[in-house]
Image (tube, rainbow, N blue to C red; front, side, top):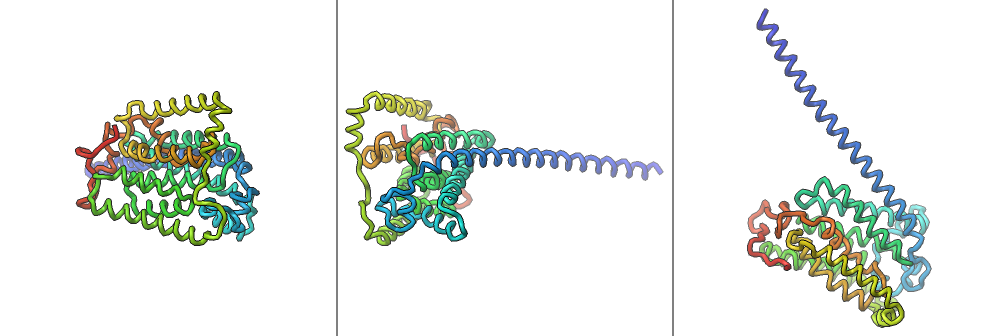
Length: 358
């Protein structure tokens, strides 16, 4: 009798423990689910608000670079090469969406993609997995506000930004198959995707086997050349040039708007101070991306950007902002922990003897 009671008691206690464990797990899952639903709701709301502000400023009727010109094939080079959004708009038109609705959909979806990509990038750094859910939307709000402040935008701006952020994240995490997909789409979105090849070359020099380094670099080079070469042949008869130059307008702006130039210069200096503050404590992966790409973007702005055209900096803005918001993402002077080991021999990244930007 005593043994039967003991068995019942043990069974009952065991069952209670299992139920309590299940309940705790269930409550955790429900809480996590609720927080994720709220997070996605907030992200989508942010995207809809900024898409509503941004979409009306998109160039539509401009005969050189407007959406209508790109859709009917009369757009000028190099704008004609940026075919990803053109193809998406054509596909949407095929299912009955108007050009306006298509642009709103592309901008809104791209903004959501920017937040997701930012979260994926920031969460790869030690200690920032939880905070990435808060930091990522804030960074996108900053960039979207800069875009809205400019008098005009292009339909491919936000898709290009989203693809660049995701490419940076996948490159940092060494998800090479998915990176090549994102890189190929970035090539179809804008020819500045060549900057990603330069960033990869700087970031992984002497940090992986030469075989992998050369193979991955060559694959990106071949993809970019194939895409850009194919588009150059497709639009060989289009008017325009490979690159438009506006450096003379910068000289005029300096003469006519010296006070504005000083204000913008002060803002740039403040941003650089925030970026380089405690420089060596910041993730070395992002440091290499910044020092390899930012000078090229600066030169492109002077030569090919109009005065105060902040959208020119979209390709480097994600890295610059993360360097400001993530002051110590990983251990001082090393890659994120996810990059320090590899399941295959010869692929390990090492930072002991690797050069670092001072």
